[in-house]
Image (cartoon, rainbow, N blue to C red):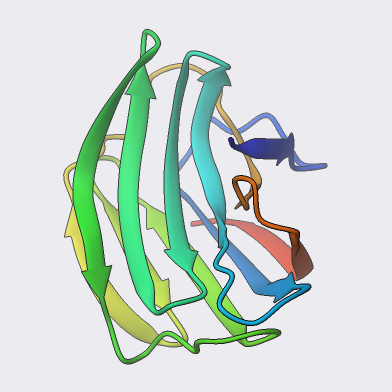
Length: 145
């Protein structure tokens, strides 16, 4: 299950960066959830997601014409704060030919995701599955670069 919301500054046709402070809060110990950034959103069948879990993993995936492809599989990284109410700053930098994912000031790498030729939107995502949890977001920033 993924929920997303388009940013107030939603029509983008240039290189950009998006940053947000994200937190997962859950009602009971041991529950996990994901928070992230939706980017290069054309419609509900075409977009990319960079997300992290409350257990310290991140991943990057895209949906193209309704089919999901993993760009970076779930990868554990010590830069990601874990546990209930842990805040992480997630940033993507979308250039013409690639996107860089930065979490808490640490680069997770660059990925071959070109900026689409069409106008795109960006937003946030939260996924908790069947878990009683919620994603909280603050300081959502979109910058033209």
